[in-house]
Length: 154
Image 1 (cartoon, rainbow, N blue to C red):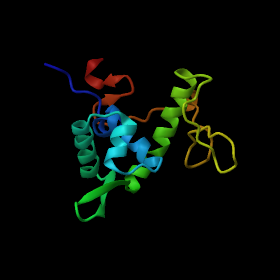
Image 2: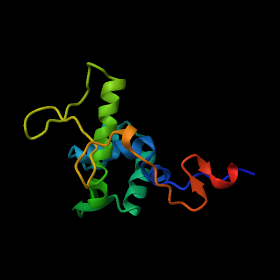
Image 3: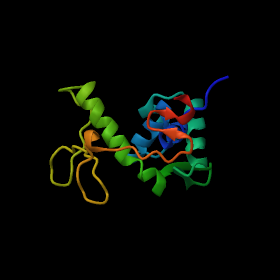
């Protein structure tokens, strides 16, 4: 019998947006691309796969369908507030890819309003200090679990 996996918001989020084309759709929408045909072109997703991902993202409240034509009925896809909250995730993922997969050849550079290339940083919402992994402590709140795993496994 397979043991239960650790309860985790990362796993829950990945179940919804962890598939390649879901994240690429969010990238495109954040860049101002909202129509199906352009989403197909820019993501490289097969039409049926993209349609399924869009449906799932709409059902989850991450995107919304906005009509732009009545005859024939056509829709654009826009980020909801929950979808816009995923922007920092995309920015940090892109930054990691730039540094580790495309060093010296960044395929897309986002500029901050100051005119410089954006370098995203994760900070504490309380004190504003940078989130240094060496200084973080896990406060495991899932019943029966510790940072090392399930309590009954020791």
